[in-house]
Image 1 (cartoon, rainbow, N blue to C red):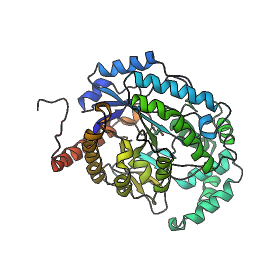
Image 2: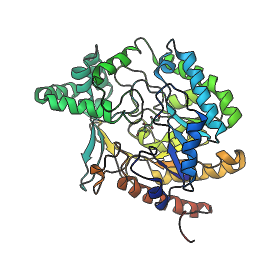
Image 3: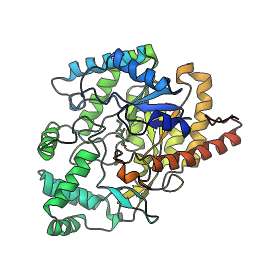
Image 4: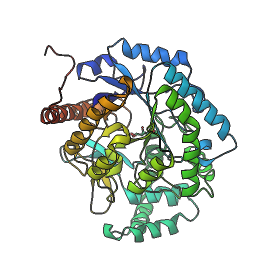
Amino acid sequence: MEKTWRWFGKKDNITLEMLKQIGVEGIVTALHDVPLGEVWTREKIRDLRECIESYGMRWSVVESLPVTEAIKYGGKDRDHQIEVYKESLRNLGEEGIHCVCYNFMPVLDWARTDLLHKNPNGSSNLYFNWAEFAYFDIHILKRKGAEEEWAEFQKAHKEWQRDILAEVAEIKAKATAKYDHDLVDTIVIKTQGFVSGNFKEGDEKPVEMFRELLALYDGVTKETLQNNMKTWLEAIMPICDEYDIDMCVHPDDPPFPILGLPRIVNCDEDIQKFLDAVPNIHNGLTFCAGSLSAGGHNNITELAKKYHSRTHFVHLRSCHIFPNGDFTEASHLGGRADLIELTRIFEQEEMNRQATRNPETQLLPMRVDHGMTMLGDEARGYNAGYSFLGRMFALGQVQGIIATVDRELGKPYHQPGFFD
Ligand code: DNO
């Protein structure tokens, strides 16, 4: 796999120079300054591509070219938005970029309730607490029917042996205005702000904005969302065929339907469904081992064995699920996703690609995803989950796994930046 890194553009205080020193070969990034729903021009794409190339790396993956809500819920503006998306894709293709990650999650791109949860070793990681999330839904968003839905959710997860609604009541009894503010900041601003385009730092009424977005999905079922994804994929496939662009959907994070919204990429059945709906090699998956492993229903190694040939981008991280269903990010060498086994599967897949794909799409890009916040990372203003030292530590571990697996497979391993 090609060792890549999610970099947030020229304003990122982690520089391309730093990334070169730690063995990064390719960059995963986006035009973060282009507002949601506007065309990515060739000039802007070229400028960023050339900047990356001047450091001896390539722009391996776009993460993300966001799919606007109108495309997802099937709004009035959908056809226009699809045209905008096609134009951006064509411009990326013209500039020689062949891999695009996106998601089809309504409203929320991903969710956590605590961004600095202490690990036993003193570092911290991202954390998701179901009761806090339910509290946000019931008492902050005040979503109609939320309480009943959580009672149902609770019944469906008896194995967690907890009473989510009782925990919500306890949180409510203690919650202060600051607690509510911080929870909104975590769920809506800090996790979404740098990725989704729906929200940004400084938004004054995030909860109201959130409610307006949720309302767009009134009456949108899982089937509607699946059909809308198919419509959209079918519209863009001709461009992907022309430029050999691999589209890879990011799984839902967490891999459950939440806030009354449908979610369509979080288990084996869902993945099979969208792949079959548009049976084109360019319709593929971002194998995010972390997102998938936050669901006890997913066997990550089995999913990789089944879907490696339709995987065009790999996110390596692993989750630990507590007995009550809450989850946190485990070490990259522990948790529910066996990254050693996954590396075996995807390194082999990359070898298969040498025979089946064009030179531009033979490498299988991989980035370590999220990482501990450690040794001063917390003071450096990094985006949630995207620390420098924590991710560098994980990348070092993953480089070791890849080198070992390559030895097993008889595949040459190259660590850039050294006299070999
Ligand atoms: C969070 C990320 C997501 C992901 C998008 C892809 O850390 O995994 O924001 O990039 O969902 O569209």
